[in-house]
Image (cartoon, rainbow, N blue to C red):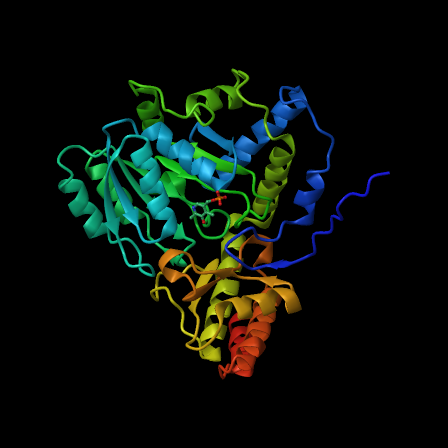
Length: 392
Ligand SMILES: *Cc1c(COP(=O)(O)O)cnc(C)c1O
């Protein structure tokens, strides 16, 4: 007999920037028997996923599927297929993920103009417009992040969509953190590429990435003179597996597709509007609670996401000690700051299953007590009472 390492992942309260807590029905779905990836029963499950993805993304786009891989695979599929060498791209950037898109566009051979906003503010449509007009020629693609998980900021899509289309450009929108938590309207926005992930507001494990491409976006993908330099995430090959052609491309991550199926079913059973309202209510309750405690929210008022809140770490408080105590004593995971915001903010997620009144109150009381031990005079009572007021 060989001794093997113990395997005992503890139960956590996942209130970071993702993954969020998975619904038990999603986890149970992953224990269903494996099917062959071309088994008619599995193909039916894929078709149902496609159908439900269209409903959740609010689109009638034919090209709607899930790429194998986490949210970044959806980003890479969108960027690498739409951007050909020499194409002009204008990238709206107000945090870490907007910059990631710009870097990918450069790897695809794109000529990228970055439109930067302060980390905590949304992208300014007027600055996008100026960049598009001054790009030195026609712009192929404007990119933006709907919900910037590094800063907790939501950038409104419509004004940027209008500018892109008035100037003959396509619009790419990262909805990794927004889908299933705040309104995403792929068709009403006029977005040409929208992608997401499973472990944020869809509350499934990380592993596949929903993506949809508009008819105009699809024309651009097919009109490329050189094939995109990703084979695995080539959207034309992926589409030929997801549509009735069923041409083998990769072995679908069967259990993750099961998880996606159940996660989407849960979203539709709750109802998109109800789900958005739940995220809004809980997120705002957390935010008024944090302020009542005496803390300062980082993102600009009016652009704060309900699903991811950035709060400034007070002077003299130790970032690692506070997050360590939250995890060790209460099993609560919250995120630290990325890039310029490292050790300056905490990122508290209320996504999918994790977005509950109980988690709001648990987080406020646990964080408040730990902050008091650190010498910060957190008003825990005021925090809980303000949050309860917003929740009722
Ligand atoms: C999490 C996230 C990603 C990347 O997704 P992964 O699943 O980590 O690959 C991309 N964009 C945004 C806005 C995100 O929040």
